[in-house]
Image (cartoon, rainbow, N blue to C red; front, top):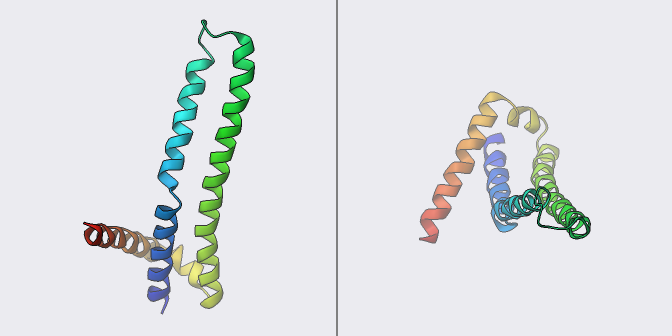
Length: 118
């Protein structure tokens, strides 16, 4: 029974990961970070402009980081809900066998999903 619950939890987690655009949010953080690392050492940009732009970039990074945190929190809560359905599920999931099995389930589902979309 734990295998079936783990499979369903992994599938839902992968869907949350994909549908909430986790990777694109990470890319947005990288883009803003690149802008910050360009602006701060630039001598041709005035300090007045830097004082306005750097806090705006910091707010963007905080916003994107919060979105990433919420996505990870949703995925983590799925495992806690599954643990409430089956006692000992988290212990199984965090065991070596559970980790290997969840990786295989997630990669298998991603491969299956990609083959269906083509």
